[in-house]
Amino acid sequence: MGSLIFMKYSPVEEFSRIYKLDNFSKALTENGKELFFKKNSVIASPGDVMEGFYFVKEGRVIASEFSPKGNERIICILEKSSIFLESNVLFNVPVFCYFKASVDTTLVFMRKEDLLGLLSTDLNVTLFLLQSLTKKFYSNMNHIDELLYHDTEWGMCNIFLTLAENFGVEEDTKIKLNIKISQQFISNLLGINRITTLRNIKKLKELKLIEQTNGYYYIKDIQKLRDYQTSIYTQL
Image (cartoon, rainbow, N blue to C red; front, side):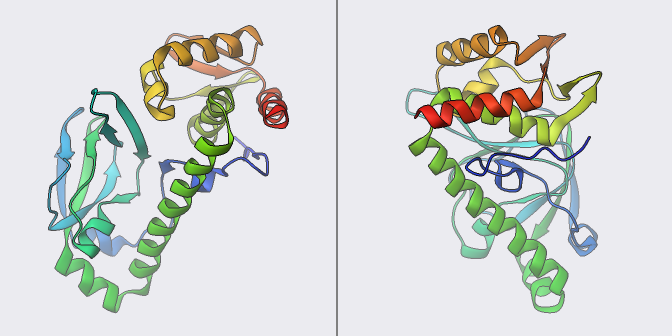
């Protein structure tokens, strides 16, 4: 599938909350310990003090936090070849959210002292770490902008465009999101209630921009969805 181009004011896919990196250093996997986590296993919890960080070799990890009322908000999705908890390890900061395997997942755990050793001797590791930290910084900045300057309908369009960029596959004239996501999952990503999610999804379906078949969402016309998102933006 070709690259999907976002509007100028829309967070580019590089800085979305779906993390997956290229050109990782093999030294990260060669110097760590491989661990397996079954689907829904909690990898780290708020308050944990980490002795190392994780590299996603296979699978998917969800980072999320919960409100005092128990509502979940998804902070980011960590895909293959991404790393997490590196900043906690480097700066001795306790974990502030939950990290959970959303599918069967294989991770590589690397201790802090091994990481520091590689940072002092391997430029590729240093650059990879800086890339990860930078992407997370800009991702958070873009998310703040989205909350401040856009409504939930614009955010819903942005979620589908971002998912299409990361998980979309061409199928006939449509884009299939090759990942099963529930309405609750979308609500948790956007930080909104299910009623609002249902209303926005219903509207996109009525406009014939998206459809759902066998648990998978399809974007019927990617350009029309972009254009509709633009029209929402210009009305704000």
